[in-house]
Image (cartoon, rainbow, N blue to C red):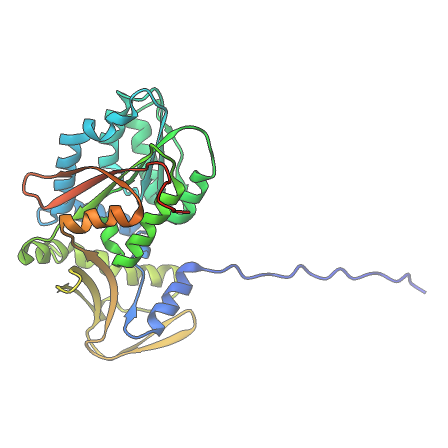
Length: 334
């Protein structure tokens, strides 16, 4: 009789969650349909956004660069004689950040650059350019959502001062409550003496806004439609890009610019094994870009528990970079 052999069960395959697919299925399944703007930034989306940033109609990058170049020394002067880590939330290509890093190197004995982004392509580009233009700067890329990265950085009590950057009006891509929540999360992860620099796009004439978010060259259109192309590439979806239009609208109640993808005809699209029917004219909300007053900027600082240090504006007062400080926790914040 043959000896009894124990059979080893095959290892159980556990499907790993796909956050992109989960967000897409949830967003297309609700009414009105919507998709989180963070999924714009795959490698192609990041490249297209860099084209947008250099368009004549897209004023945001140009005017914030003006602020950073003019006031860079004032922004970093408090770190004189201290080791400093620059935490760059939503780093993109890091162009404006490199200006600040250069100024900071003239004040601080050591500087670490920590770009934070969900796009590996954006992180790679930001790190490569800093290493190339500012040799000797330690680079610590973090591929994570902002909250996760802040918790990771806040867990280390290394005595290094932090300057957190949230530039480019990225704060405007969040609803007001979400923006306030993120700023409180940033505040909770920092220590007394740390500072944050947050970019706010200010309210301005509507024609300027419309041309910035729906440019004559069609680059913003390509950026929006790339979200559908990404779903086709990564999720096996079957969007026909010719069947959707880019729309940019103004909501005066927030106030905010909004981006949409509008179905040009009745059609059915399949994503992740699920089918979604679209009527002609039905829209998918893809992005919000809130615009602010100076008073609203001050209110954000107070509500999050920061102390205002300064507010830097461009010559036309189209944009503001707010510099805030973390003081001792005497306000009851956790």
